[in-house]
Image (cartoon, helix red, strand yellow):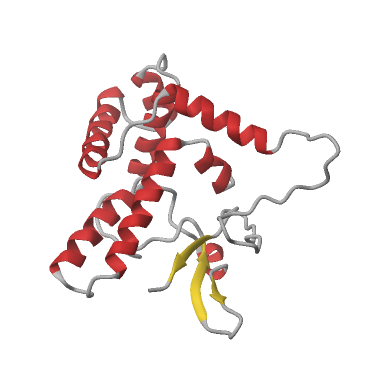
Length: 200
């Protein structure tokens, strides 16, 4: 599965990633080891558990520096799966990734039952999934992340499809990955778009 189409058509994941990036920038401005930095690190780590699977060896190899005209490094291009905090102990985050995916499917298709979603996403039963969903909702509430609606999912799918709709009297259209970014991102097996993290 390519990451960019998945992110673009799953508004909750997109919001989580955007909020995580904002917190990461804030954390970069704090002294390592400081109480404020540790608190932000914990918040970021908790959110990252609901994002995409951890980057594999190939994703990490595709990381590369961004240089200005003088050759000075001004940023880093890396996989969207890269973690702010590389290692974490505890329950495997795959369960939390499945929880977020199941919740997104419920939001996009309200008629789907929790029992059906539990079976589809590999949970023991409906109650197990609902317990994980309640925990995710608590995290989202603390972080001020609103739940998308069915309309949000329909709109996201339509906008993504429109990007690749055939156009008359036009050749290949290049859509920049980020505003002001002229270079196209390198496409890998798992990262269709590289994220840019500006160095402080």
